[in-house]
Image 1 (cartoon, rainbow, N blue to C red):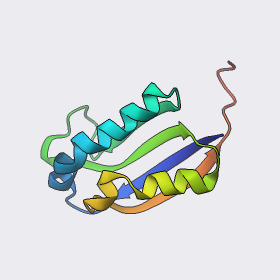
Image 2 (image 1 turned 30 degrees about the horizontal axis):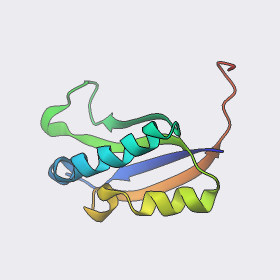
Image 3 (image 1 turned 30 degrees about the vertical axis):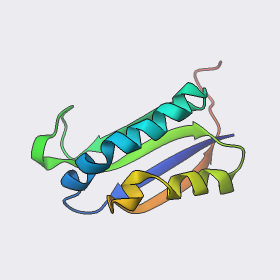
Image 4 (image 1 turned 60 degrees about the horizontal axis):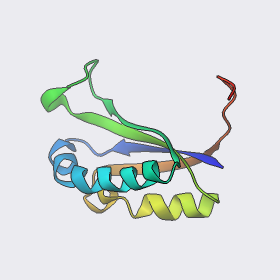
Length: 101
């Protein structure tokens, strides 16, 4: 099943993000290589592809996992969690409606 992993950053998370980003991206590439990643990205703090020092307010990952428990376990091991980037992480099952496959 698909799961949406939605994270909210702590204030002033930019430096923590920068430090943990390479490891975070590598984990996402593994999901991508396995055909389990639909989309992943960050929420810029301002309306810009490159928000500069304004940084980001959170992230969203939409990926397939066998169960909610496995999605939660995967999310807990994220390098951004270990680096203290996220204040909270919410994981919800997701059912795609459109566009139809």
